[in-house]
Image 1 (tube, rainbow over the protein chains, first blue to last red):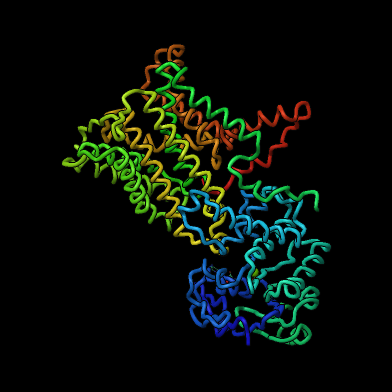
Image 2: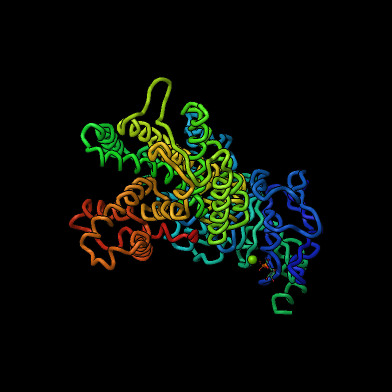
Length: 252
Length: 357
Ligand SMILES: Nc1ncnc2c1ncn2[C@@H]1O[C@H](COP(=O)(O)OP(=O)(O)O)[C@@H](O)[C@H]1O
Ligand SMILES: [Mg+2]
């Protein structure tokens, strides 16, 4: 039973069909990669799943629940967290506060209790902090804990953003080009983390990725897109051998 | 990595950073309590005004400094608070009830003005809040039957049960209590998830939303709380002046509030107090300076506004972290002496350079 089912999803910008009739299902604890040349519509597909864009056709079902029309801030409550292609962090806050915001969906206290900072709020905050420390340990971010995000190198910012998504404890995580801009060593760490997310944290992972060696190393299945449409769907080997995929990358 | 582990997780959201900070605040508290016994009447009166501005500034800082929603309309909330308390007391409502009503009505007006804010940001939001505040003052002027229109209203002394605040020290006690409560409330919100959500909205709405922050609800909460505090400040202001008319709540007041939090230091609690002290002290400084200026300059009516503009400009260009940033630099300089390096506080400097202005 697929944890996420995308059926016939499409969206246009003006005359441009950015995503056109995409359908696929992702199994629980699967690592699912989406590849395709620039402008293929991969990020747009993520934006539709996370409700930033309104799809013109199709539906998205997560965990048996139709999420095609839920408010965008409820997506993470449903259990889906994401990262952005062009890192989207809270620049004027510390690494710790960025991760703490990842816990936002777990809060229950109202405005009055927070204004009084009651023991309940304090307990919630402490529970968050414990969870965030687990993420900090997992991603080895300890030495950046109290540093403002704005001043951090690109690779670290990328990891902080991953940490913020993990802090939400999602069941499904969407990673938009997790290895882009990372050096060899950082990319290798990323591979381990992605595998650990599945093996240790029981998460399902969908990632948009250009690095084919990374894709082959970690993903169970691959969806290839071009010009908003599906080119191929299968194991990394099958998709790489697909003649249509090769043509798309050669600028066909 | 273990070296970096904090000794306690509560450290990051304590009311005061550490024991030393708590000590200095306790000392400050003592000084404030002692003030009416040692300060000459004139200075105590100035301190009352600073306290009132701290309450308003706490409101605006939450909205603009932390949530990133610039308002050029806070004079309207100030006016709503002042007129509500004056009108209700005129009809025999006791101070505490009238004071609460002033806060509630201002919050309601803030909520309504916040509605267009959901779709606007930056300059457009500033102009929308400005327009809304014109409407509010217009209502106050036209609704003569209740507000007495442009002729203004006399405001009685604060009376709580049998006790009457008939002297400056008594008014000071009330203002001090409200100012401390306002600062505590804002500090609590800032260290609670709601404050974090506001800062997230300031830095990136898209990311905040994707992490579960309901943009509409948090922005409206920021507007309502901000207006509530500024309304309470207005109610105190009415009692301080003992006479109010709509002319006291023009756009200049809104600008003064913005200057206050900007010069104090955007996104800092200390900035609220420093900014309030600055805004209240500036006219006195200008008055003193007038004696030393050539008559042609000193006689200009816009002198004070010009000084505001110049000071604001200087801060934007040279010290975007405001007075609080300067204070931190001085502290840092002495704590590092003689090893101070220029640029070692760069981290702090990047703070105010968000896209919220
Ligand atoms: N908000 C938008 N408005 C107009 N066009 C857009 C918008 N978002 C994406 N597009 C267009 O949709 C197409 C797919 O973009 P995108 O999903 O970012 O591609 P990819 O992530 O696969 O490189 C591109 O042609 C892009 O210009
Ligand atoms: Mg993309």
